[in-house]
Length: 290
Image (cartoon, rainbow, N blue to C red; front, top):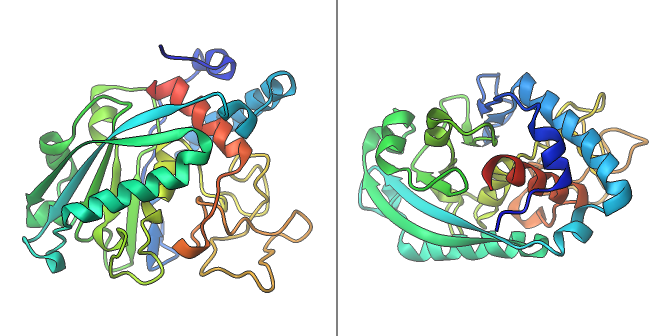
């Protein structure tokens, strides 16, 4: 049985379609995430923040609310390579097994698990280098809007840098369902060759977007930031894992959440989602995907 939260019911009636997409903004990193929210999605997130705050006064939020929840996400893994060699992006089945284990380990404290619904391997030089996304997904995408599709590709982005991306939840239509999913650089899978980002936690980060979470550094030090009450404001993305001294890019509002999966820290630095982020993930899932 699908359970719809009070926040979801209250907010769903006024939700227009809001589709987030790979960024067309100037890149600020040689490696990172290209998922950028539309202005419309930011407005929706701000509205949810108000609704969640009101609901939490009487019902509790975050981990306390999630403790009674358990959802399992059917997940398809697509390896899209240039050749049948590892150097061409052809991940072995063991890498998929290891990636699923990392994803489940990272999300288990929040009542979320992922089930391997299937996996496939495709040799296509254009698709492997992020060419013709629509054609690729018309051929490969599986399942409905609550099915997660992860595409491991040989390269993403351009000469300005690598940018992996995942689509935020929105009103499901034929086109939004087709585009839905996460594009991941194959060298970030567990045991991959990309130093500091090869423990599989890039997928954890991108799936956070699939659940509707913004970057912790969204909006910088001013405004509402990532629209999550318990993540301190953050001026910019974290590079590395600056713990001594702790990074405090917006002085007076708490140290930066460098251990949060929605920052840009090294994989070894990632540890957690906050209670309010957990509430947001469930609200978005109930509203759009359940």
